[in-house]
Length: 537
Ligand code: TNX
Image (cartoon, rainbow, N blue to C red; front, side, top):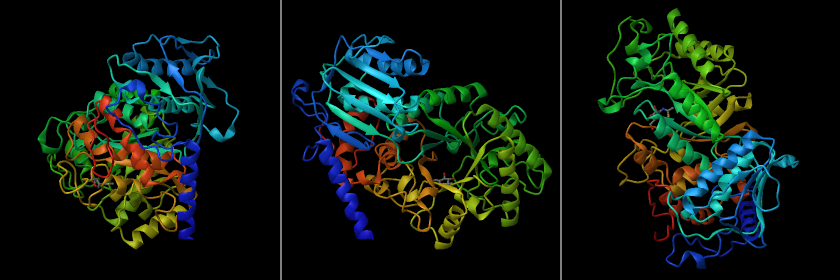
């Protein structure tokens, strides 16, 4: 069985490589040859790997005369057209007018594909001498197709000043749709606070790799980061510091809406997390009545976990949870609300089970679907709940079994194994930032696993998708976020998007290397892992 799987995987990826016409073609990132002499990037050379590629025909060139043609009856398609124009104008220096006028030339964005296999997020990109046409069933598909088009153009296209070009896209057809519906990245804004602009910058980076979910870890021991009108001290006092004693901060409701709107414009759904009943020192410090002994502890700026707990037996605890969830649910258009539930080491098992039962009911009452860390499976997950697995190679068999049993009973899983997808784990012993409790996680280790078979006993269709969490005990700004997220994040994005048959480290590392000049052009501070054959830049 195992042999068979390996064989079919390998065979699948050979097929893909052959179909893409990229066999034997190495990346040529940032070579010293003049750009004009370089052939366009082969059609399959993108991250995440596309589902199907048929290379051939003449390339398309974006020129001074190129127009971006959008369906006239959709404001959303026009907005995607404008987004694409904004991406391409600074580096090409071309006007690139966005027009609803029909025509067979230019870059054409069209809704109304009748191919059901594309689903809500898939697209088809056809490129030839006269035009590039992206078709999809819905706007999210068009948006993902635009990300593909971006990657098919030379990396210089990402720069914010006029570059030489030429701006060619290889000829052929690419038909693409995601393996998993839930492709997520988490940002911990509690341990260190990140500004709205820093979050937006990360959202743009996630969108490039077709991530469609942003999980915001909005509360923890070290800081409460979202304004709640009925409990104002949570943000005002509980948000007033962070790890190391810095000033912290919080999002006002309008800041939060601005993040949501920006994420939505990049087709990401925001999943807000209020971590409970543990990881709650910021709340406990803000309101004495939330503590079992009625005494508020001081604010906390260290990095220990597991010492705080809401008071499960007290009625006021559920008034608090109800108010917070009600206000957050009203602000959040997405389907999900994450209630944490991890590392509740200061809550008895009995209290934990009782608390999670009540908290889940409150989430349901406000019309949202519960997401919880996988410890939720040690209580009673409600029907429809999603558990996020964050175990690692040393996670015990009993704990894994509990997760598998819950999956068999209908709990869906998002996989974020700490020794694979935790972007805050150090790459190796020389990594300056990050933690190492789950071991070192180099680029190959974070990419080389299969979500469908990772947890024994879990039905394949229980897996909703994958997430790459970024905890911020050691991270204070975008430069540090990027050093840890890049280049591992694109690998997790590929696990979420690309068919299993494309999975192959040897070819992935070449495609990843080709992203290096793009990271640089975007100003992304990435880790130059020795496992990846980066070219000279
Ligand atoms: C474990 S993962 C935690 C976080 C820490 C993280 C650091 C999880 C659900 N809990 O509280 O920030 O490790 O890697």
